[in-house]
Amino acid sequence: MSSKSGQEKTIGLWGLVFTITGFVVGISIFILPAQLIEITGPSVLLAYGIAGAMAVVTCFATAQIGTLMPAEGGTFIAISRLLSPFFGFLAVWVLLCAVILVNAFVGYGFADYIVYFFPSLNKTFAAAGVVLFFGMINVIGSDWVVRFQTAMVIIFLVMLSVFILMGLPEFDINNMTPFMPNGVGAVFQAAALGYFSFAGFISLLEFGGEIKRPSLTIPVGLAISFIIVLGSYGGVSLVLSGIDTSAGFEGMTTPVLEVAGSFLPQWLISALVLAIIAAAATTVNGLILGYSRDIFVIAQASFFPKYLARISKKYKTPHYAIITYTLLSVAAISTGSDIEQYALVAVLGLLIQQLFIAVSLARVPKIMKTEFENAEFKLKKPFLYLVSILLFVISAGFIIMMVSGDPVFGLIVIVVLVVGAVFYKVSSKMGK
Image: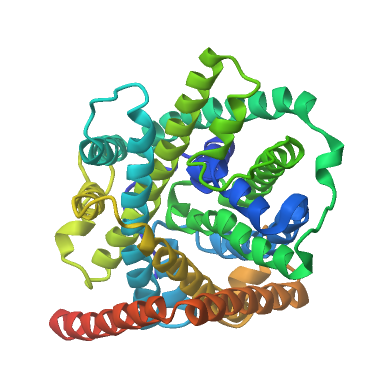
């Protein structure tokens, strides 16, 4: 099974690095590290190290499957071939439900800061506007997507660097003790939450068909992106841990912005707000680029209406799939900004995808024996099986932890899976 869209391979190494970095880092870097410091104290650095080590497993799995089957809608293509079309559809069905909510959530994150420059702007209008804008850019072509992504990622990486470099002179080593005030358990709790910061690496599978020289670009691009992401989270966490905030970060809306106010001039604070806006926009852009391709490839397989698999004659993009994903995101935004409770559902969707990918990876040497043996990028079989097992255990462990903490989210996911299974069966019969 393959995906043929007529889309040119327009994403090179640095385009991939900026696309993935923007998608993974996003707006959370300005909020999450401080929340983790509240949990575990200065040992947040150790927590991010553990989270990063777990994320390496995801990167290896993504690199192996992405280089063997570089396709648009790669999750569906890979799982369908290595397991079955039913499981491929189910994984993507849950994922789409999740990432539509994520896009709405991040759209409101964008709106929360654009009002810094335009105080009278309606937040719902701003959130819908940024999603519609990048929907339009994606219709025009992935080369334009990458150009916008590159510019926005450079903006927020420069400002993160400014924050870290100018914050280091304010760093006091005495604030790093006690290093582990809440014990080892708190470190692993923070590591589990920190791991979600790295969940976006696997999104590469969704637009693999547009990547130039995938056997080289995908593994190298993932490695460079991982270093940038880990360095960004580690640097911000180090500065926040070492600066005296005797009252803690509780109650701060954007800790990085509020802490920066103690040592950055006002004009740089405005630039930092611009960086936060750019960070939110990169995630919106990456979501549309990646997950509209899932709609496209499922329509190709006749489980969604066939017109969603059409390619624009002018732009050579799956325009109807992009427009559909964009409008569904806008519909989610129109329900109101009180959608934070759905964030865990989105994370569960990504973890379920990783479960399917883990099992699929273990079947690669058997199902794709010839392709695997001749592959330019190839994990040693014992290591491949180890990655598969670790990815499955990590994903299943987090799912159990999240569902046991709030069973309602587990119930929601079960309902989504059942609806997806029924939809698949009905679509299959209608397609015969």
